[in-house]
Image (tube, rainbow, N blue to C red):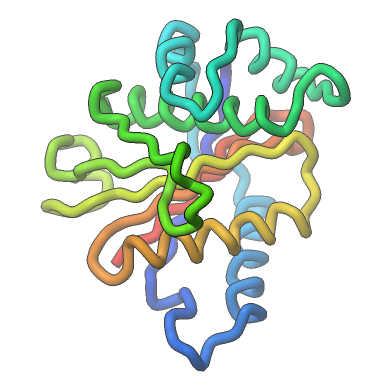
Length: 204
């Protein structure tokens, strides 16, 4: 499957961290992130290997019999009885894990998903040891640390919903990452009839 990737990089200094900051400040930042995506388009296009997608789907929050079929339905933009919200979540997780594997060589064995304890509200979907992967270290310009990852997806491009999800993901990431580690929100969206992964990268 073809996927357009849009990288949006943030310095942690742009994010609210003190008690003086409000929810509106975070919403403003999230809206600016989405606007950057809408204006900036995509950075690169990648052909994701269907075999890798099948493997990475095993690490998602819900096992599906035919992830390739679900992704194809997602690509076609069908909704209603064909895909539930849970399935769209699995699509987002599966694509995110496969993308990390293809871009940075992240081993399937090192995918440590925390989705099963996400109900606690204090953990991301995934954590990666940066030190183990040269491509990732060079990309981040980092020697060591952790990359905390949130995997998101939506079927319909509703700005208010996407901004709200970005805000919630930023809170989760910052609670774990700040001040010394790295964060990534991978948000799979259909935009202008194209499939995108909005990759929001937060650096110290």
